[in-house]
Image 1 (cartoon, rainbow over the protein chains, first blue to last red):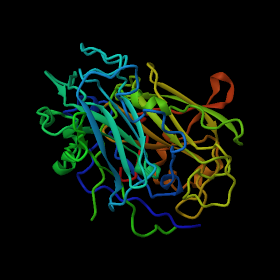
Image 2: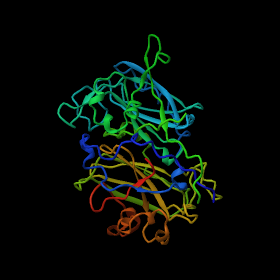
Image 3: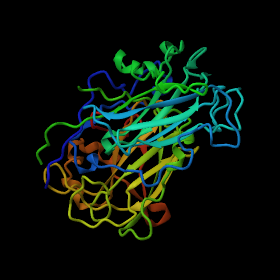
Image 4: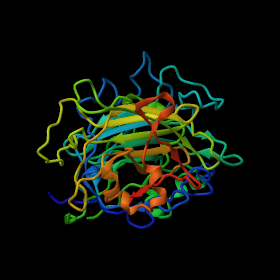
Length: 234
Length: 193
């Protein structure tokens, strides 16, 4: 049997703990027993791929999925998907979802008193190219209130979901916008101990991708776990 | 230069918008060989209340114990169209359900085959990073020698092994729950994330 090359453990503090009491929903949902450390096996170094079934027309352009354009500030969100060794990850699926410009999700459970936009679903998909690049066209999502604590407001954010090359590399995260005054007060943003790791969730305004007369550009790279240098002995 | 992996954030309550396109509750088409099985259960929080906004993802080998992935170089057959991927949300009563085939044994870290198992990722509002667990099968001789199961204290093995749904008299339906806290708390695994 061939040896299995494991994925690296995260740098300490760069990933959240399960329990973060300021985020109230974690209190009854975070496991209380420590997770059981297991070695990597073939099961964890393999994982699903999706390049063949993606992408529908306009899946990456959230402003062109309906008969007219959505309201809001048009933006371009682009970047690269890399591993921890700075290697681009091609053919990697990204799924995103977000609120509309008024801060309302197209979801039955979102009862925020802000208007829905008939021209905005808030869902996007893309697959990275040979250099790990992706690009979405969308509108800047609005901030919205939530019931976590008195006068709680989520900063504007876009949810990102990626699989990467293996079960081990699965990542769901959120991208924020630079200069958003709500970010320092957000218990979800603050759930990660390492300040630099948190701040890497904030995208950069990007002149290079800003399109004159059309849309502002934001740059956001996503880093998936790298691999150990040597195989585990089996 | 070494980078650090992007920090995880909760999936939140509104993931259906972005993730429903790849919901998959039938993991094996008609042309895929193997013993058919339906797995159902519920996700329960620390008060025993159902979690209506969780989402589970499944990853598994086929009945021969082969993953549909380039790094599985075993000389075993792989049916065209078999992916081994599933994604199911919970309903308002915290329940989920998916249909698949029982996977075959895959190699383990001790050079011996692992007992048949499904890998499961669990995401939900309030959970800041992915919960990783496994579903094993009942009355499976390989369970006793399974390397991963034997890393878990015996009293907690039951949280990882599905049980036949006897009330329906249906041997092909198994029940497996995700219990987030308490005495029957499901075993979650640490892969570093």
